[in-house]
Image (spheres, protein in one colour):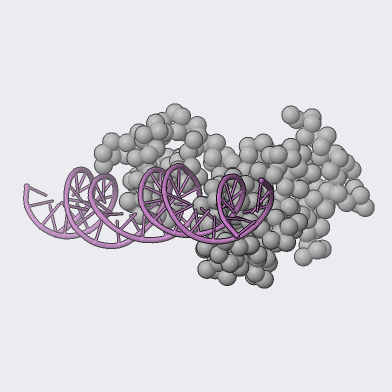
Length: 143
Length: 143
DNA sequence: TAAAAAAGTTAGGCTATCCTAATATTCGGA
DNA sequence: TCCGAATATTAGGATAGCCTAACTTTTTTA
């Protein structure tokens, strides 16, 4: 298992690698607002867990399992931020910061249901079927 | 500010005091599944922050500000557990454990919106107005 | 190409939170 | 009432995560 903090590091590396192909200590530190020293400490642990690869003083890449884990965290983050903002109408900034924290704590099942709820509310097909009961049916149909 | 951990202690004391009028170290330890020693350490901090009163070897009571804070945490917990279970259809156990963690991380505004969303979905009055747009109107009317 | 700048690392320290083991206090029953 | 059981506390230690300061390596540039 990896802690919430380590998930944050993985997620940051994942996001950076989307555009840069490799990540560097400085970028991770900037994104997470911690010092380089803290990043180095976290990277050592991630390396020991086989989630990243890095040569001394070199670039940082996710391993297969690191990438899978990071992608999961990132997906949870996106889903939550989107739900908070586009369903609940929370401002983007707060939606992001809430997602940042809740992505580590909410069960995958819970987040999955939030995604369904958004779909349900976006459904124009059957606007007459509002309400909890029809949301339950909606869940049942897709799971 | 109090940490997530201290909020858990406050909440436990609050719940215990609902039925017993005072709390004891042993009960708090049992509820949070930590040792007595950990409870004692946390109580010292809560005392320093003026959130509880306790004589040496004696009973534990919340102060006014402690009770207010504990009530807030407890309310967030209830609202989340209820939303997860009764709206999302998550099993009670998981709904509780998710609530336990998210109660410390989600902004009050976010939790407030979840409560509104439940009300909205429970509204029988206007079942034709399903969908995100009418939820937004719904929010607007009550805030 | 050598010195300066930038980036990465290490060493050591701090705080929060938990633990176990030992000790102190309180309380209930013989 | 006094002794043992129950409860509370203290002492000391571990871990995680962050920091600053000093140092090393790499990169840039004059």
